[in-house]
Image 1 (spheres, one colour):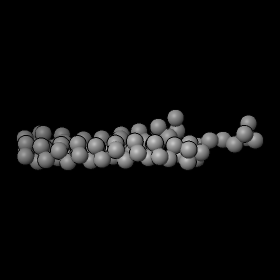
Image 2 (cartoon, one colour):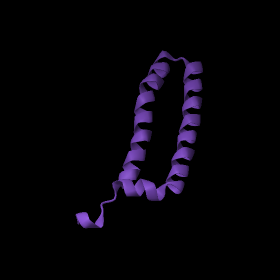
Image 3 (cartoon, rainbow, N blue to C red):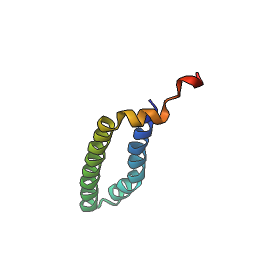
Image 4 (cartoon, one colour):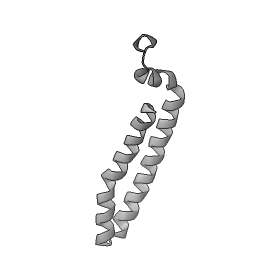
Length: 74
């Protein structure tokens, strides 16, 4: 669950970070910049998703062990 929340914060931060610019271009009615920005953000989101899935599959044990408590701590 901790790993999921860490990865989710990447997506949330990315979404909030670009929302202001999208709103600005939309309000400005600058459709060229808006379309370019949406295209770039979709490509970046796809790339981040691929990297996230690959890391989740390949690094499951190391990622989980970062947040796992040793048995002696129980």
